[in-house]
Amino acid sequence: MNRKNFIQSTVLIAGVSAVANPLVSSAFSLSQAPQKLTLKKGLGFGMIGEDLSLTDKFKLVKDLGFDGVELNVPTDLDKSEVLKASELAGIEIPSVVNKDHWQKPLSDPDLEIRKQCINSVAQSLQEAKDFGADTVLVVPGVVNEIVPYEQAYVTAMNSIRELIPFAEKTGIQIALENVWNNFLISPVEARRFVDEINHPLVGWYFDVGNILRYGWPEHWIKTLNSRIMKIHIKEFSRKVMNDEGLRKGFQVNLLEGDSNWPVVMRSVREINYTGGWIIAEVSGGDRNRLKDISERMDKIISYV
Image (cartoon, rainbow, N blue to C red):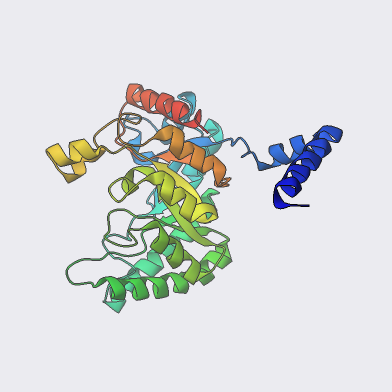
């Protein structure tokens, strides 16, 4: 049998098999299709701009359609009051953000400064557990004129490894985020950094808006893949950045910048994101402002 006849015979057999057992073909197609994701909406506590009690703040955002609030830690808030307000309002605390990792970075050449940050993150891990969260956002390091890139890479990794026993003790994830810290500015390098640490409780907190300065969010999502533990959303406009200044690029509403949200969210679905949440990290305000953010987030989630 020559090659042409062989190919024709093979195609014919495959077609007959599909007709004879159509369930095989349809089952294969269904198994390859990305599954629909159910995502909850969160926002940063500092975005709630109304002068209300803690419980009423939580009730307000619940009424506006949010499912959770993300806190900065270590916090001076009374933990029992936070937990009571959370329960009364039906609001979850899915994650927390360490507040010291920028001023006292894990990559600092000064050992004493690094220790202060390690202690702060260790306390954040415990507070996350106390609040019922599962993730602490940590900026892994900062590169500047006095901290070389390679030195920051090694020092930050060693600092994070020192935190692993605290993560294991609490069962809380450490999720690293790129926040214009001149560090880990490509998705391949970010993936490599996480993989070199090689621990299931260390992954990535992906911020859609932050990445638009460096590239395209959908590329980062596909490269980081299962390493993504939580997702922050904000918007960014390269045109506004170029016309008005670097950080002015953030001053656009969700859905009005350069994020291609249908493509971004399709990528989130394709990697089978298991973090369960998208959390807004934008300028907040009164109930009208928060209602607008909530509705824009609904539109973004509809693309999943």
